[in-house]
Image: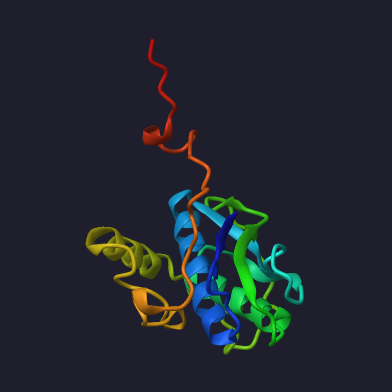
Length: 186
């Protein structure tokens, strides 16, 4: 599961800004999914306004099932943007958006399927294995820094973009990061 905040003092109102944020979040979630050797079968995207503002309130989410389990950044971003396009309504000052990967499974086990005749222009229906491409992308980002290679829909504004992740209250990763382990001193 990956969940991130956007907006903060600068609420997001435009679909283009939300597309950038959701692309970034889905890309990071897909990278983490590959690190743990897992696949997702559904992508959930959500948006909401701040419950503390007196503006009009709006909160929606949508789960988009994938044709086959995947850890491919392109497939996961496509599903997240499809869901976002469905739930977005103009005129609201959005404070939070997020992407969650659902029904995770190991990438070592795959369910076969019959040829159902999916259209070749459907990114989820393509049988092409992009494992090497995703590994190369992860390797370059690890070597040269996060964001060296990224999906085009995440935008090119960098630090000048209006939305940004808020991670001040992020829970430490006690079970996954040795640096986050609490230390007792006597």
